[in-house]
Length: 311
Ligand code: PMV
Image (cartoon, rainbow, N blue to C red):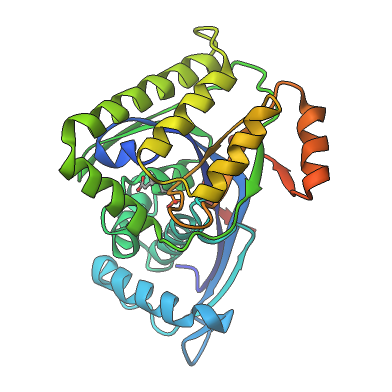
């Protein structure tokens, strides 16, 4: 059993299906090249966490995991290094949950295969999010691109997706950290579903159609217009009320110059809505638009590897 280990896990982008996935509809999701890296060691006399600001959060997660792993792992020194933006819909908390679960399973000599790691990480994710679909945990564990569906609380299915299409460049822009947590935006949609079940179920079914279209597009089974699929997805998310007024305004101005954009992840209701995913058929037009408005764009790289033990 190792007494020190470094584990890394990726963040993610939901290409289509966020929110609907909580209610049993599928999602298309990719791991991205932003990772959390955890160095965990038992060669220590006291519990320590770097950065110190994460100590309370880490302590709580260890307490939860101890109950499941059922093995004493003594005092821990944990150093966290992450370039996944926090609270922006890129799965930072799930990546942490996956990395710490994998590290502690390994250090206590337990089976740390992907099924066990993701099961354990899911228990932790429930602590932060209440009713997560598990899509963030699965993609951070498995990496690549996945088609995912939560059938029941304990039964989730997914399939690896091979990208057969040379995808055009997609960009991310950070509208800022939403005031609401993912737990709150998920709660907001669940309330809407309770109030107007047939209307919201219809929105979810439409989202599923878009997700299937995107799946068929990237696996080259059918020739769809990527822009209109993403735009439809955004409109449906707006119907769920998870896109803030200022983010809608920005997305409308992207549409006015020929592009499309959608939120990705939980979104945000009042002010910011986290990351938005942007596509423009004429790349340079988007780049000029962003330069003029001083918007920092990042290119999305699809299909990063899942949780990994680092040398
Ligand atoms: O905002 P994030 O990165 O936690 O993504 C959440 C995705 C949701 O579909 C809104 C919630 C879930 O558990 O699937």
